[in-house]
Image 1 (cartoon, rainbow, N blue to C red):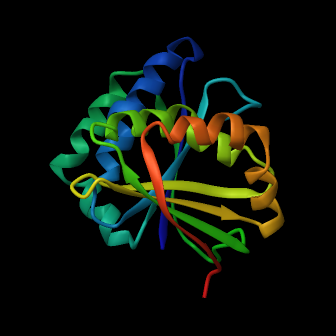
Image 2: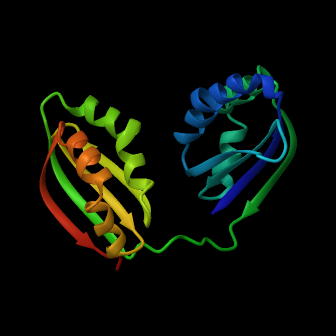
Length: 196
């Protein structure tokens, strides 16, 4: 695994334009590249006008191929159109990857209502995922959909079974998450699993 680190300065008055660049150009262009594994765009809370971008690649060749191709041109031109200016660059190999341990992984298989795909997507991104991921002990919540078969999988990764049960018995689950999501899906199967 290989990472690219870039530190940039920008005019804080230009923050909206900078955010728009990462939302509409920088992030989406990289996301479809072969070997791209993810990334973080970090804004300093100690120094105004400082961004640090970390992109993660399967290997250096994936990044090198992207960086010299025409596909990278919108990124270069987009940065020039903002107040961002690169102050530092580095390439790094991952020495160790430390991930949180999910002692409990719960999976819900759902049937999606006819015409419910857009509503489910909107609920998940506007409220549903945040309700789960803000619960104590939640590591990650993920929703996957097969639009052709109108089926969805919702996967919850928890630090413990107790944390999962606490959320399941909470007001956020019973009064907000379940009524919200069941406008668009009907659960048809559940699993309580652990990593092998």
